[in-house]
Image (cartoon, rainbow over all chains, first blue to last red; front, side):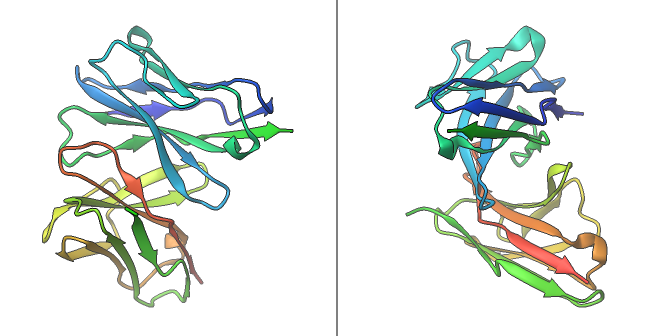
Length: 116
Length: 112
């Protein structure tokens, strides 16, 4: 069975610095897909970035990037030059390659507070 | 502007009453989902719909049923709501062979 674990409950950083949050996953599949979502204070859930397991290069979108360490089953999210509006809860999620219907398994989230 | 909508956004019901949550999307996505979110548990999948009248149970389907008669609409029904169904419910959609799911704004349900 697939499992996604986020061990950091909350992180506090100063504005304009870099924040890194961890996520480890368990899967038996050789092909899988990893995602990060952001949930804002209003409750809105927004897709940020994804990493396909067969790709060796770390994904980057804007000031979000991933640290994909396949041997460690780890997919960290890095946010550079943080802004106040990056304060949110960040969820890691995984879809296994042969999962019918695109079923995602989510971690429980990491709360990030960006201080001015 | 592509989006997923949910109605109502807030709902208060008494135990034993029926509940209908509605979800719509304008992206012609084949696949739609219902999740619930509870503190400390993250997002849990209730049901998946692959297309009209093609639905499948997720991880926690007990106490829920769904209906999808049009591709753009997906309903979650609670027959005789229970207090432990108090939660925030999210709908999402994705293209059939694409993995990225797009979420609606959520419905906050309180069952008294």
